[in-house]
Image (cartoon, rainbow, N blue to C red; front, side, top):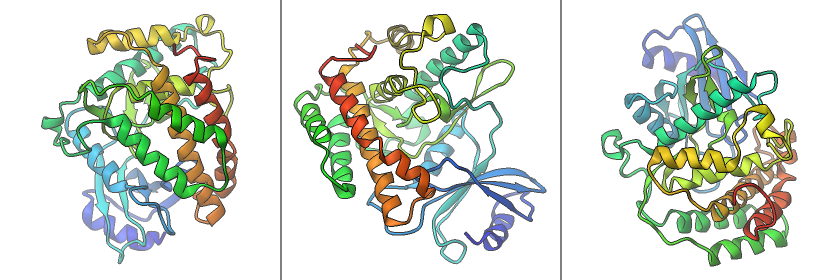
Length: 340
């Protein structure tokens, strides 16, 4: 990116912005390249589309900007968005600028080094934050047209099946079997439509270092209108992954000893706060494994095509497509996991 042109643009469009820019690309942001901008007027975050040929409807940073603006105006804990740019005279790719949000980011859900009390508070804040997202008044937020209003899982299964097939680099029998199972076990549409974050997990959240309060919800790239249990299922899916930097899960962890709630307790707390019966999560977790496998296949395809944000990491992530599909099938068949 030409940050000299971007600097001139931001100086005109963002009140109080002052250059020069010192830009550092983050190791995260596999789908949309993300930069930390350090300037005399403060720190900012810039998110852009990647270069090269892109899949249809992917990398929609304009949607990210729109939902951030709507939620910021509604008082939700999201970074303040400043400006969206789609001017090729400024940048070859669309980007937006938002504030640099302060807070602790935990990449490992075990929250190593914290006390059981701190862990309980953080997980409770995460649960409360999810209900806040799902209780957003779509009319007041101006998001009634942010996605189709009904049949969320049928739409998502169709979308990600097509995305997976468009980026496939080989045959994965477990993925084909999982897609068939999901199609055959689609829950009836109960009419619930909320804002859905799309990637609800602890490393997409920031917390106050002293009070453990949720300070910022990040990474809205996959957000849309849909069924709230999609977000809950995605979180439970993440917890079934192995511990460590790559899996970032809670598999085989003694949660009680650490002060981390079980799937059952977490789902019950969420349901109580939403005012709904406690749901059976099997389909929703299996679906989450499928969708993540499809996303990782796209990451792998971009790496092989030469336009990944971080090619080495992208190839490493791409190796998980098969294991995610296998885990989804195990969940579907009731062979593993706490989610049931």
